[in-house]
Amino acid sequence: MKLYDYFRSSAAYRVRIALNLKNLAPDREFIHLTKSGGGQFSAAYTAVNPQALVPALIDDGATLTQSLAIMEYLDEKHPAPALLPAAQFFAQRARVRAIALSICCDIHPLNNLRVLKTLTGELGATDAQKNAWIAKWITTGFAALETGLARSPETGAFCHGDTPTIADCCLVPQVFSARRFNVDLTPYPIISRIDLHCATIPAIMAAHPKNQPDFEA
Image 1 (cartoon, one colour):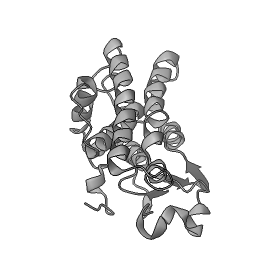
Image 2 (tube, helix red, strand yellow; image 1 turned 60 degrees about the horizontal axis):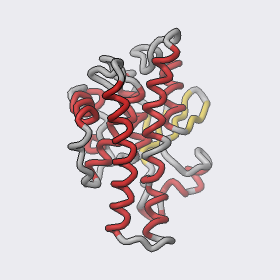
Image 3 (tube, one colour; image 1 turned 180 degrees about the horizontal axis):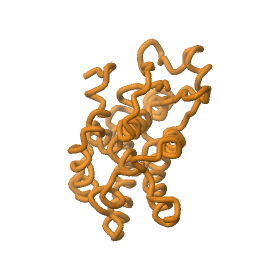
Image 4 (cartoon, one colour; image 1 turned 30 degrees about the vertical axis):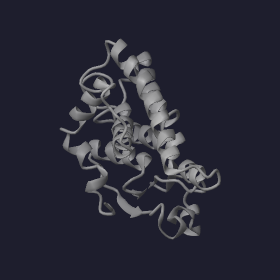
């Protein structure tokens, strides 16, 4: 098993959490997303992932891309500990997926590196405008997520119940990103509480960007 990784990538961070929770330790190759025009655009890496995005995971001859697909693959191939509710709990599984998707599809893509580079490059946005853009989409997404978590009796110590799921694998990197860009988390006490609880889990903390071999301050 081999993971193509970058310490600051939110999508790679999700997969690192899932791998750690499963006690899996793949070989890793680090793809620097900003140096020398971006290692993700190299011929060697686009041969692995034509989207030029991280992460990518190679396992048993299969090349897997997209963090959510990778996490579900890991959960199916290595079912313990489970990152989704049991198969017969259809609504609960859908809820966990919906939380994950709300982050991975509705918040993160608007603030990822290629969007921000387009804003400041082709569209000429200032740093202040870029940061306002980032805050707008994080706060919009977190406001809806906070409301949903508050309304559901299925919210527990984690996003769903009292064991981590793929929803938490997605939430933790997004909170890290919010803090990185100085987004005020005060209006989101449940999100903040879950993130703080996740920080007590060694497998989750081991996936933190600062704990990666390629970390740069």
